[in-house]
Image (tube, rainbow, N blue to C red; front, side, top):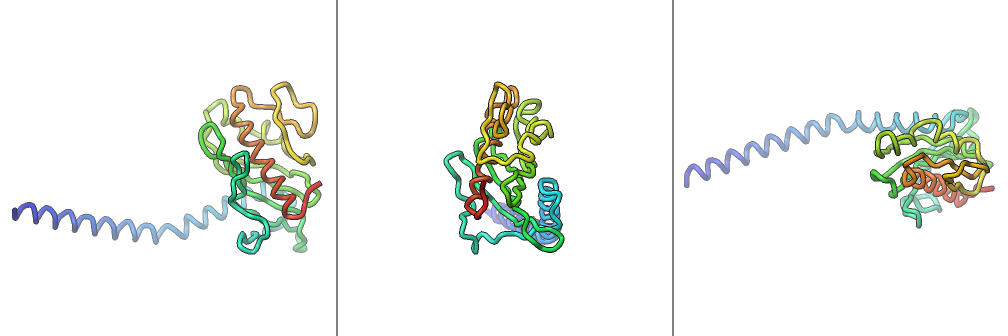
Length: 198
């Protein structure tokens, strides 16, 4: 009986020390991690809207447009920012959109849309598709199909893109292609709700 109490006290002490250590490490690293995340987001913004001099986050609470609500294609806008020129004038938006329909799980893209509705580009923020197949979505050859297009929505094709709104599917990765295309379309729909659109 005495050894059982001793073991319980030992385990309790170990748990308290480990918990305190984890709490300390969390407090020590949370700000640098948040800073790295902010820098990664800004870098993605700059890559999809290189003409912008700065970005002003849109507060979901004050926006008339709902964030974080999945549409019929399983996509949702996670965050948005206004792209600004050097004088602080709005020249478009940058949106972070997540598709829940990827083959390997969620795919999150950042996309830039100019005020006239032109897609400035897309960048993968998070993707874990099959190597050699779905991961080709990260390559410029696929991503650049969306760049500098002014369309109401995109559609993927397996027979070769013949129009601006068509995206060549990645061979062997139709699910990934569909997920990214739907994410881009979700972003375009959100842009239209913000008052843009063609």
